[in-house]
Image 1 (cartoon, one colour):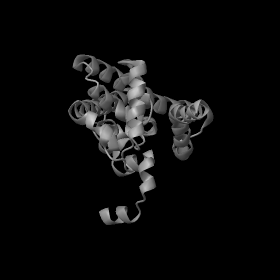
Image 2: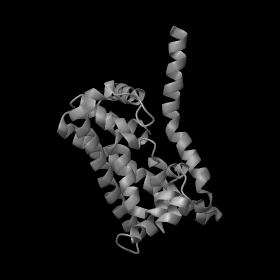
Image 3: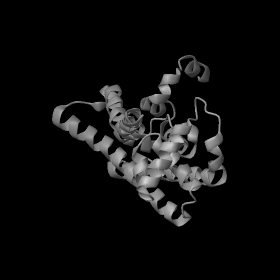
Length: 228
């Protein structure tokens, strides 16, 4: 079974939410959410789109853990489990930042680590303060490095814990419920099943969530070029 899976595997599948749902289900989703915020190398993982698609398949995923037969209980259970994974991931990132974060600015860049990501997260944190931990949850790449930066600048632990919990629950809740109820509404109103068009949906979510990062990145380059 494993040999068959590996023979058909391509690295581009790591960017496709349906890959995780089909080959790992709820447990792999928990691992991805933890890794995206707890491991700096997890910035490329599809956090937003994965949760949105998880909302579409909420009942199937919940049945892997405890079958409830109720869509609201399914969503609540998924929200609690995934939020716990995200909170744990951010906590690890915060701890990592306090211990070895400052030394990261001197690390050699490679395919998994870019100093500019750390600098962008630091700038974002300086601009938004503690609220950056909440806002960063909704911005790819930034959410991976925000807790590390919070640890680097020695953000008060109680303050971090508060913003960490609020931000993670808000992120998971919004993405899961959006996927679930949008799928339900569109199917009832138009007979259009989002499950048959996941690739288009994922592309749309990626474009929307990465727009702030792209604007900041290219806008900053343009500004620097004009100043020069």
